[in-house]
Image (cartoon, rainbow, N blue to C red; front, side, top):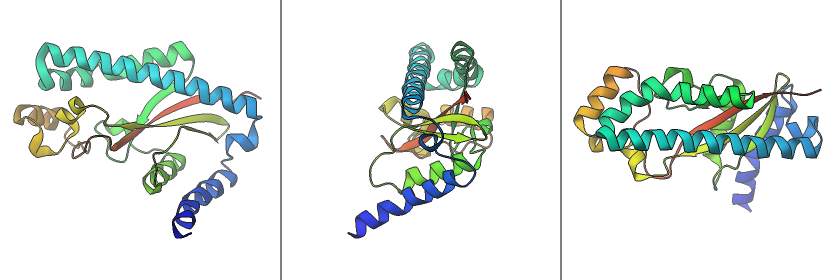
Length: 195
């Protein structure tokens, strides 16, 4: 009973957040539209994730984690921007512990969903909310591969030259200290809401 009550609190908090001026899409759109946005968001985020992982994997093979860090700094945004143009949406990643300051939790919805994801007893599922007349899809990003930890793991496990490069390129880096399968961020895909 206690566990059910504890699980209900964050769900209730999210309901209250999105029913007070920032409505849940299911309350604002028909079920078919909601499901379509969920499907499209899943497809776009999967393609973005696969593209970034393929490029980072290739960079790791070319020059290890040191080269991959520089590659990410120079190319990650252009990869997501290209997909944003292709799908007519805005693709970003947000996190409380970001590497790129542009990926901070910008909106109240970002902050609430981040807090909610950390309170759940089970992994957060993809969700869609409406914020200021835009449908926004969120999907958790986890440190799913051991290779992720070469740049995002505990500082003492990151190669010293890679850590130094991270400090040079991202002086305010917060995206270290993760363990395998830990929540690292959220994909955030903003679609213009259709009337």
